[in-house]
Length: 175
Image (cartoon, rainbow, N blue to C red; front, side):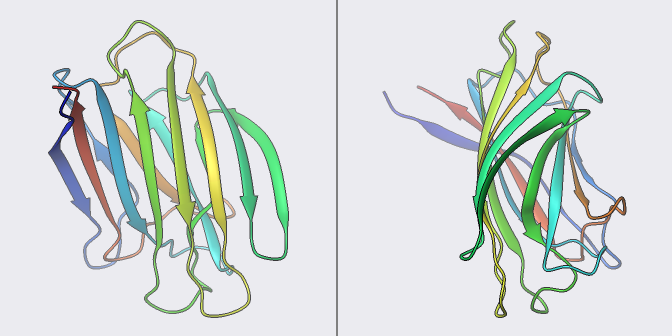
């Protein structure tokens, strides 16, 4: 079976950055979705920031499990409820200038009447003393088809994606 990827939409933070990226009116003609993110947050004073993911403007019924490491620290954790939380998933404002974290987010079977799962892997870059790698699994306990996806950078409650941050949404077909 051939697997085909089709670019559905893309987003780029322009001059001054962007509060968030949102993909709306996602067609139901694919089997799975893939989002490729290259991002940096403008908020906070740390080398990392977090990426928050929500579906269909819903702020409930999310759970999240992750393992992460920084080269000197390893940890695992769980959280969620109002979004899927990609902890330490992208570069923060105190990381090396003009360096962006990268993340792939895979969402299988996004139109089914089952709960929606996702998996992601991310890495931050930093030419200093701290960088993070993460593997994440998330679940949205809702049976609705995913028709919109919102991505927000967050650190200490402040939310803003730095200029030149990008996200690409692909539809995947198994034919």
